[in-house]
Image 1 (cartoon, rainbow, N blue to C red):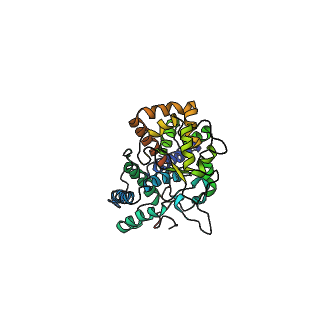
Image 2 (image 1 turned 90 degrees about the vertical axis):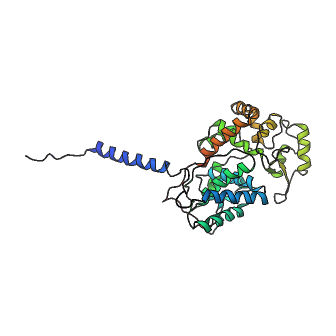
Image 3 (image 1 turned 120 degrees about the vertical axis):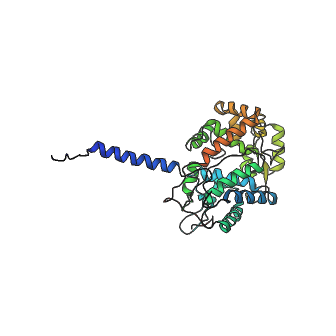
Length: 328
């Protein structure tokens, strides 16, 4: 009896390719996981936490820098430590963008990286250092403990030309700000929660004076505006000078929901802060966060996880840098 030959038509080929694609998608989504370094570098997360605590006690403002690093890195294409790369002959650094004005303490990322290299050479990515140092920095400031997945790879490139397309400006309309965050999976409530990170740190006068001079922004509380003028006495501050105002003058280095209470009283530093109150799509969440600190922390943690998992690089796309500010 002749053996029947089985023919695979176009539909069978399509199904096979579709299954392969599904497997690839599943693999890409499973790149990040909790305790990724449990076998390759068991003390990785502990070492990062130790270094963050040590650096915080020496330089308290590093904790705020870690949070900014994550936001400015993860919003641009991927959480891939591209923000850390220095300018080379081939490409300019993202750090040179005006959207990244005032960012600092990058050298301490190298301190953390060196400690990890001593323990587990060429194992822990700079991208994971950015993510985990932010997580641990939030705790040092009194914020929530967040379970964060790891397994990110480092970018081989900077994306200076892309920065302005991804990171919203403090003077952008609220619709633009919301659309930028939505593009990485963060909804309106999550966006308001993430902007609550303005409860710590400071803002350079360069980004404030447009609300003070030549006339005071009428949406600013008059007494608060007078206070800001003592911090920023010139309408043309020197961007290289240390001239700034605290985001929250009462508890400037404590993670709490006072930021939301302040902006409800017209005491926000930036235009984007004030817009959270004047825009009805965001104000409802401002009210919720101002009324319940625990709820703010919960929603911030959820939004930060989404942001921190934005488009991680797979093995063939990324690398593990030995030094965070230069390519491997």
